[in-house]
Image (cartoon, rainbow, N blue to C red):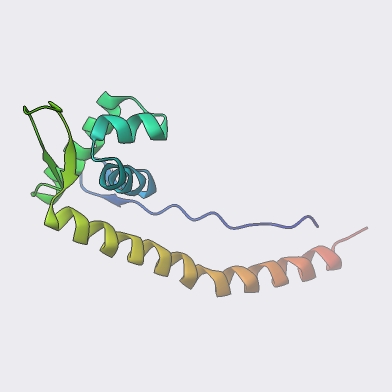
Length: 123
């Protein structure tokens, strides 16, 4: 049997759709790093309009702003995470890492049982 890996995808969703997952987390982390939603989207290889919709969907679902947008001035653009946004990405990252860690033991048990099952049914 080839080595098997477990890939766990976690999403937060409301009645309408998914609004938070690893992609949104990466986007928010990039905004924090780049200081711009446009630069973050470019760095992640997604369109600005998609990035904007992801943030808008998240903010609507949570009922609060996660990004503070800057307009005007010399740079004419930019974005930073709100205090809530900064705390939220830490909380969500901790949550998703903990969930993935909790899946390790059941996955190990599954792979061992699968090896046994395969050996009992090998020709």
